[in-house]
Image 1 (spheres, rainbow, N blue to C red):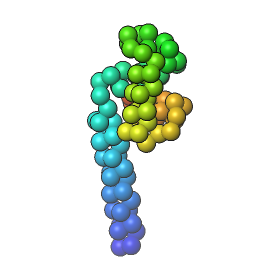
Image 2 (tube, one colour):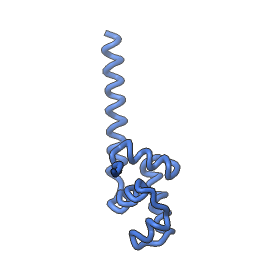
Image 3 (cartoon, rainbow, N blue to C red):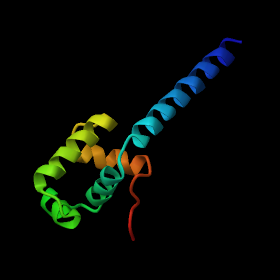
Image 4 (tube, helix red, strand yellow):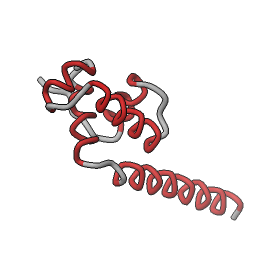
Length: 92
């Protein structure tokens, strides 16, 4: 009986974490998702700005918002998060 209760608690906790991540990802704008894709390609801020016809300052602003929304602290962590959650795909 204890094993069943612990199992239920674990499943509930995992489901809540999954829902929290889905909520974070759903909060991203289309532009932020586009930027994450370009980061996944390995582009630097300058090249992202050129590709999206925006300033580098705007790129930095979007990245700051993305970091805050997803709870990551830097570009590397963001790219890892993006691959883990299907926001970007490995290209062949």
